[in-house]
Image 1 (tube, rainbow, N blue to C red):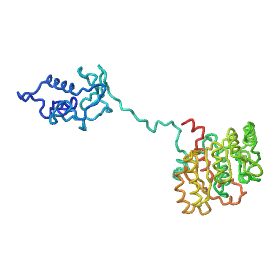
Image 2 (cartoon, helix red, strand yellow):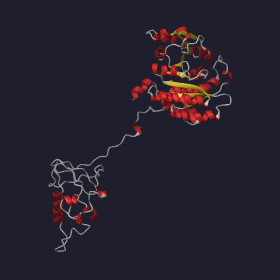
Image 3 (cartoon, helix red, strand yellow):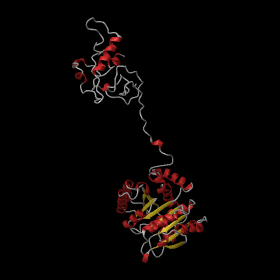
Image 4 (cartoon, rainbow, N blue to C red):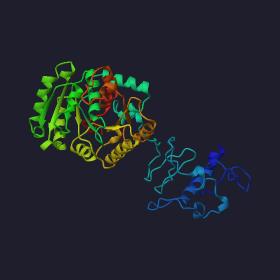
Length: 419
């Protein structure tokens, strides 16, 4: 108690109880409460500052004319005399003699005092920082990365749950590669097989510009052709809606899957802007739209710039150099602000019958820095031929993770609303 009383008042007071300042040296008697209060009032008058300054001198004792040896422990450089206004404390009365000179800190539980006349101290409430639990339910920053980086058993359970539930909404998935023959059509066919097995209709747009569509034979469904000029008009949405009514009613693969080959000028690939417009029009009636584009950096960058891509699947062989090139390309897309590859891109690596080599597995460690993560494509022996149909339990099992990755990826419309 005596230690707290010794620090009552401001720095620079002459009275120090711990050093015997409460004893009258002339008579040897203890000072009364009234005398202690008078000494405190005297200390307050010495330490007043003008309103325009509102600062305590660097050496309060010398500013008040007090010798250094008579200063109390409540000096400005004492740890217990520092500003602790952020600590809540009880409201204490302020003496009437305190004018508008400045702020006063009281004892062991200080509270700030306003500079106006007649104001009283109030308890200060420390603000509470918002926690991560305040995030809206159902919103995750990186849902695709969370799915791909789980342990195999936990990931399989999550994939089963995603595909067992109702399809979350419209998704546009673009299959791309930096080199030819990487297996884009095979990866698209595997995702299609898993999505159809889960009960979702799929539309595949073959935008490679070839004369014949290998994608239709891969999927085992009937295909149609569209000129790229029919994808940009107002009737494009009506055409895709009519195609959905004719082909999407059945439960088999022929009814739930439709392949549209988009022709370009003189056998060249169609413009990326037209393909993006066609995918946007088709997404209004088809819940899952897959787009197969030509290989190469320029074609992939043009497709990303042309339209909103919900998921970009970079397909490559199990070659460390090809994996590194794909990862570097995704880093360029992220740095330029064209695509948030951290939650909208993955690297699908095609394995052979012996699996992925050790060098390829080591190269996949760097993918997580630029994309949501790697996704190994299981080898299906009977899909070695280019026109082999990707159907059956083996193809469904190989494409389940791809279909679930498209399901958990947030659409560009939802992402804009949540941010």
